[in-house]
Length: 260
Length: 329
Image (cartoon, rainbow over all chains, first blue to last red; front, side, top):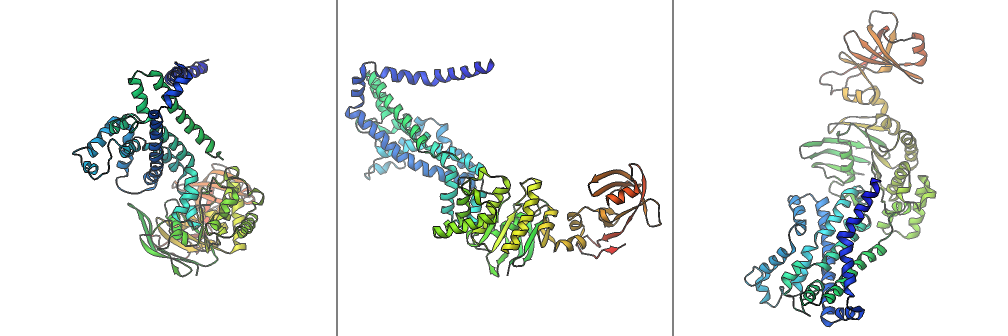
């Protein structure tokens, strides 16, 4: 009996916290009919926002995946001073508010900042793509590391050492032994990184300048539509955002080889 | 030829794992590194493999100094206690790994892998994954994988340590036969003296990072260099300054001048062998090992008083480090 209470309790909680709010967004998106929703997400501004969001993710996710795997290897296998500090720094993006990250970038690259002069040399960071990519990379950094670290700990070093005695050079050992063992964790980390990169609002909002059709990502577009009283347009764009996230999760499920 | 370890030392922070260890391993031999945990035997094996870098000293493989050579270029085959099976690869791919790293032609690899799977009796299991094998099968696969690259040296780190007693015994006998077939210079690390004696032609006993004695199983048992070796290679009773093996303890029902009185505490029947646990009047415990026939003749019972004499005893002079020939009684 108590088993059922627990089961329905958990399901009810999930429904209330996760499913119902998202469900309402899907439902309300079509308040003014499908045509209106379709129109709302196919305006040049909306399409540009979609394209920009995907472009930023396409840069930030691969970089964070490669860097994340290297960091995870360093944290688990490395023997160097400052490892504990590095471990704490990796979690920083989870701990501090994204808005603060955005403001930090503004201070660093803005007028009078340490690297503020870059803009005068023609390399525009703030209110442009580089700043938005930097902000996105920062907030989505920890996921691959945090997924891969426990798996690396669990598999240990014996397989790698065996491969080494069999003649494997370091990169061969990584490619043929270590990577296949962590592949599942990397894939899951990529899913989380992508989801975070696509959905990021706070940090990107602080550095983007939010110029419609130029530096407006899809989450920023949603907020702008909402503020402009086009609620069903905002919901429709939200649905697009959610569908991309779901597509990422599903496609990785399909691509991932079956575990032995 | 073979393997030479010259004055190798290795420490991990404050712990001295190896202390000026020198050891010569003849080509084609099967040598056991025997010692308790923490004695440095595994570290020595890993230094020879190149997985651990010694602080000082040299490692020579076939007269060539390989101290600075990385593990992958030493041509050693290594087998680990917990198999180190490549979990995401089939048995076939595990065994083929070293050859495919060397970019050998596919047909050559196929022939060699099947030859090896036959040697380790896993012919039918080539397409299985390690998770589908028993512990003993996994370890035989690991052995085939190590042998595939035709190593000049085979290093086994407690290879049977994770297996149950029966499989362990089977694999020991099998390893002995395998070595007679392939003749590759082999080192096996073990903490089990019975395993070392059964498998190896030469045993090096290690303790606290030093080599206590090197010799054939018989030499170690009959002429141990010191108290440590004597007590490590078999059960031993201490009688004052001398040491007596349980099978060298004679039990008499009547005193005869050189005997000492003792009381039977427990009689343990182990099939053919009977172990008698005794306590002397000064409180010292000792064990005697008798045959069933001897025990029956004595009609031993708990609480009975018997008279004990050593038919053969060993004494070590000085600090128990210098060897001394045993006296026969």
